[in-house]
Length: 308
Image (cartoon, rainbow, N blue to C red; front, side):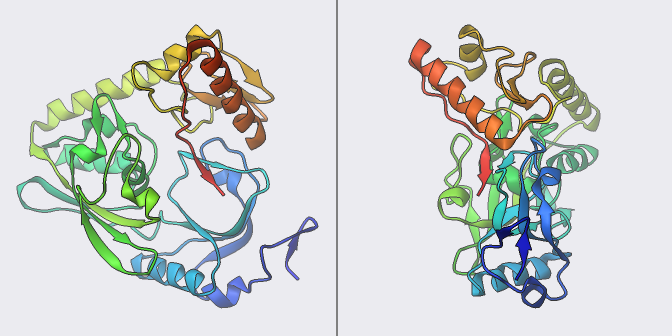
């Protein structure tokens, strides 16, 4: 029987038989694939090499009723210390097509890094995605979360999104169908697998676009703790205030639980200050939420996605 350190796998699935030629590995540490650099092993991790293999992987896992989790580069994902009972499917090699169409339309598959898309658009003199430069993660993750920064969000430039639904159907959803809202989309509520997106940009000066991208990147470096593992901004912005402001006003700058810490540089970030477990991070988040609620009346909502 397949076992790990005395812990049984979810079921004794024969992943070699189920996944066949699709590259995969058992007992893969999730700490190497997620933003906080914490978390236990996944029963299996698969690396489909192209779009066809990705669709086959999802189809096979669903046929065997094996839980699975699609993962880009895990920049906004926290893996639990006990790991994941099922198969984590990496999209980084499967969804990598990017091309430019007429009139400022851009087609980009979900496995491409958001920064790569931004740079490609800049070189082609297309403006509209400058806000996204420096946001870690893939295009798929950005669409899933409706990522945003500096007064811009993905919903501002999305025309359509290609998805795989829970019944195995390929669908193309309009921006309206995606029901984008603050750090949310229909992909979350409907358990959709995002395959690609089309974006409407405008013609602009490549040099001016680059200058704006560099300006925003420098602002990130100046204000954010990019030198420590994190999942970026930890809390959603509450109506009427800012999470970082509330946390700072509550005297929580630098507050620690185990190896997890409220960043001294930016109170909106929880970071792995060294040797943190995922349990430390979750406990710190809950303590911050409780203290802020007690002292200010505001309810903070964590925007980190759990791999569970």
